[in-house]
Image 1: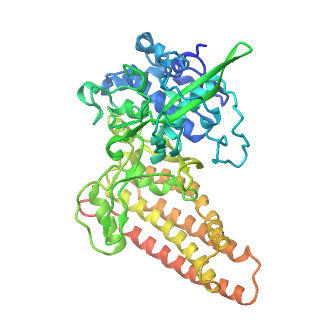
Image 2 (image 1 turned 60 degrees about the vertical axis):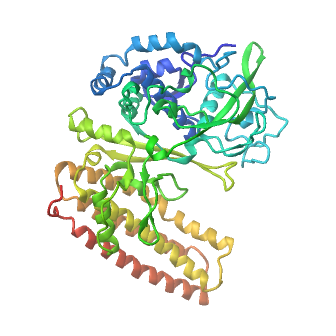
Image 3 (image 1 turned 180 degrees about the vertical axis):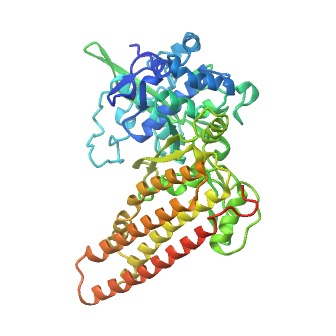
Length: 553
């Protein structure tokens, strides 16, 4: 019946040679330099597994101050992370990683006494009840059997990314919010090896002195709790960083059966768990946040950056990469909108905490200034009612460390102009189709709305690669103190050409004749004029930053 996650293979990894295998938690820490990255079945699984492994690493190697971090960073060349701390931690908590322990099963609630339901409730791509999926045809009377390793992966994923809505009640409470991971795009800074990735995403950690901020001395991951959770759902603020990384949004208990001498998971009890109290922007370090502009020239509250079905997360490169400085945000908005500078108040954005730490390491000479890491952003979009999964997302954005430590406000202005040009051209394409459709119908039909989406497909996904090139070139310009507007000029040319190509495909891609053809051509010409004007404004805006402003760092 035993399956201890510390030693049994269950974490899916990509090796340095590109092959794949499964390893245990101890191997993932002690020999992390031998593996390229974690790679789950879904983006949500990859994100959830990273968070569990990071929680374990923080607890094993605490207190984690700057000197200790450097020691761990350099340990890759000396054979890997220290074994002694890992062995001590396993001696103290190793039993808590038993997946089927009778009293303290890993990440579960043994006090649940409900009848187990099908394991399809645990596996996100399985159809259950009224939550149908496109390809899976599991019915309510079927109970797929899961290997322990697979069940463990989905257990961790479900705690972070379960859908909202009605759940099996322990007693009376049936309603549950979606798992915490649904609320933001989870950002992982990826290095050349799993060792580098772990260290790059580890915050300086010492709960006894409340490090990081809002981490109390009582902080602990879910498996270190003195007793398993009460089966009744509750709500509370996080105790600290590792508590948040292993947030128990559900009460879960796996049931097992023996098949030919092997233990398999044949059912699951899944009920509402713990709701998080507190403001996410003050707590979550693996997310980027922004304050959107609202009507009336006002700003809203901080919102986490999330992923979009069509528009790449690169649009939020300011929030993902640049340090928080409210002054240039207000200045940039004033110049872009011609409304005059707004008074500087509080920060307008917040990047993931790991990037602030990396910027400091570059400053200290521990990371080379020409290094380019990758930001992997993972997310999930729920359906309209929140009770089913609409889409999974995983995107990558290059992170030149020269940009992470850039002090010049011009970098923020330039990225802002680059993103705005893409957004304005995208809006122009959409307006072209809307105006064409409005000439024939008072309102758009569903088919016409779909054509708007089709037009966006011709445009937005094609921008990811050239924007990545722009960021790399901008990082090089910052590093060598060359003209930072030249990469933006090349980006502007590329995005205008892609918008033009999408417009031509729209014009030529549908059979039209007579009035329909004349009307489409007229709106196409309107877009061409707007495109030219937007590009001219873009180039004019960049010209302001071809040399440092007075007082600009």
